[in-house]
Length: 324
Image (cartoon, rainbow, N blue to C red; front, side, top):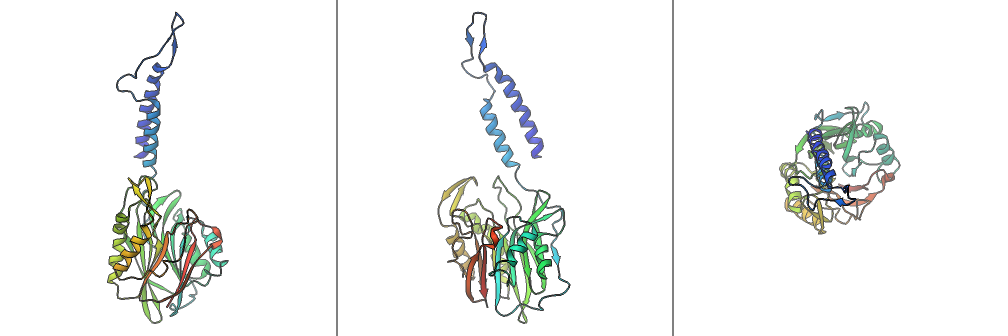
């Protein structure tokens, strides 16, 4: 649809430029130069055409649905553990669509990450319906993994994932309200997984919210996760890239500095009965000192947390927390 629309507009623009030639200086027999004093009715100046095409091209940057939206589930041949320990290390990491082997290398070479028990991943890429980045992490570490594709991207799809040392007994995809943010727009989802821990199950959520939305819209997009998590009778971990940048947005395109996105979302999370133990984590983005990622809990006590460089493979820092 976008290609057709652009082709039509390019044809129109070409017609504009063809007719616009009449605006250019031309020599008369007397040597004078004649130029119309105003454009012919119904014709747009060439510069306006360029602006129009740029807007239309931006609209074409929306991502479609994945070819296969089923959850990819991987189990190791030899499980590392039958259940998670009472005290566990949770890692949250937006991998910025990096290859699986680079993510594995980053985890294995960072002391703060290589002892992870549960890993929440966002912007996980899967090429040509093969093994996703989360799948490759699971295979390399001998962990279980579930990956849910959210949107088509390039040669495959991108989505969210949960990787666990212990068996993942069930998973569920949660559809989130979608906003047409014009550039890099697409289907947003969260993924829930049930994992056994010390003879009782816990529920883990991996979440990736939209970037260029307002405080109110971010609350709305997060609401399905909070509603579902609030109904769980298990301890809960909600980890993700919540994109709580220090901006709100006009028409999803114009950033306005506010500095309240993280505060407002964290207040909403607490109002639903969850703790926000990593509020003092500092920046999780390598740009502008933004705090975009977080880990929220219910039924756990967080004893330590920090960020980790993860070999600088992503535009995000990784985050870890010890909970018990």
